[in-house]
Image (cartoon, rainbow, N blue to C red; front, side, top):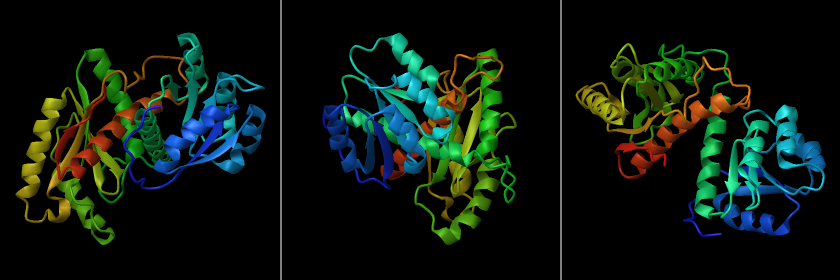
Length: 314
């Protein structure tokens, strides 16, 4: 297991590790505990199903080779109600696992696979990405689709529109991209209300009718652009940035930073396709993966001092 660059975690995450193998447990703990992950380890599927409601994990990792159930079976049982539907489930895939076994785990409810060889920096990045998606899923569970104060979509509304636009993009063979905008400097709590009003006016009203925008969180606005690739979205961001900098009432919005991702088929499921082979959460995860990638690119841009960053989705 190779070493990754350690970072100081913003908060801890509770991992329920289901493994009968001490070596696998020790290897994961050595990598993840310094990154803020806290472990609850159980050795069987029976105990995992019994204890999951009390553990209330943020993420579940299943090691193949349990004494009482295979990994797809446990993933399916956990997804059936033992844990919240927003909790990511990963399955460890040893060298002897073939592609059909990995596909079976994904169909059963696993979100992703940890494959050999295990590289610590990739595992940490994968878990951080899935936890971001978990938070976004939970944010979409509000009843309303719009923000009453500004009239823009909230994240639930954005996801509804993304599914519609994704289907249209596939049918017409057009590009679909997402940008997440925010002030380079994080706003103070007492300035968020005024900042949102300015962002709605300057950014939300500065887009085409074919595009959709809405709130990703309190101070980050997402825009889904139809028929526009990353280069076109970069031009959009620069235009909105110029508009913001020229407005004397923009306040703490400027300077602006942005993260961009092109929403390929990897990120968008066509709503017109019936796909019983796909796990129930798959469509939701696909769309939120794209938004999470753009949001992460925004954070990277902020850490670099501001500007525009295009997400690396290789």
